[in-house]
Amino acid sequence: MVLAAGLGTRLWPLTRSLPKPLLPVAGTPLLSRTLAEFQEAGCEAVALNLFHQGEKISAHFGSHFDDMELVYSWEEELQGTLGALAPLEGFFAPADVLVVINGDSLSRWPIERLVERHQRGSAQATLLLTSRADPKAFGGGVGVDAAGRIVSFSPEREHGVVEQRLVFAGAHAFAPSLVAGRDRQPEDFITDLYEPLLEAGGVIQSLETSRPWYDLGTPARYLEGVCDWIRRRGGGRVGGRTWVSPEAKVSEGASVRRAVIESGVVIETQAEVERAVVLPGARVGRGAVVRESILGFSVRLGAGTSVERRMVTVARADRPLGPLDSVVGGLVYSPLDV
Image (cartoon, rainbow, N blue to C red; front, side):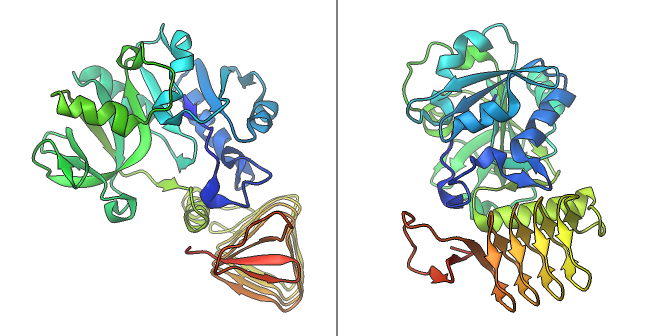
């Protein structure tokens, strides 16, 4: 299952017109990359819960991802990460192992290793933990003992001796029976399943991975994740650290470095774009400079404009502004780090 029903609030207004799982990562929707990992692992079917602009997800993918069946679960109100599974109990019942992945994360998911680890052990659940992220940036991370068992989901509550803290990478494996028979109500995996399980003496084990992993839930993380993904996976037309869509136009005399340029983008002459994500339909004017920034859908950046550490989006009458936002020429400039 892929959890795909979130509102994408922290990425607003990028998620105003497009649900977060469809945000592009070098020309490919984030969700497509996760589904491809499931398919490569030999998965026969994937369920997705939908809420915010879910119709765009179902319209984009239809009933199958290549030959892998897709089953949609529509939520009238958000049910949380655990509550999302209850309506799908019948779908999950025949399976030996259920793998759930967060739809806002980007990784080369080690799905087969996760399943094998779970099947070999005797734990009720197996969680994927990454050693590449700083636990301090994720609420203190997950506490693991010397045997790799999870004993804490927050520094304030420990159910054993913590040897190290890692970050939950948004993927877990368990038998469907672990979540069978639960009431249909909003619930969260950590607070409503895993914490009570630890308190009752249950066993939750971990699989540690050093593979690149990115939580794309905020503008700063989206920028960092997409740019680093291209650097590691190989770039497009202009080198290994830059990806330029075949449907984008980079004018002669423009400079594009360590950036991701999506379809329909125009970069005019003498413009400089460095370590940035430029989303479909945007235009960078002559001599403009864009560094460490995101240019949103259909943004028209004027000639000579300089942008650094900002997310730039089109201003709308119904959009509330943050206290640090600036509106200039019909565009909203938001600090990337807020």
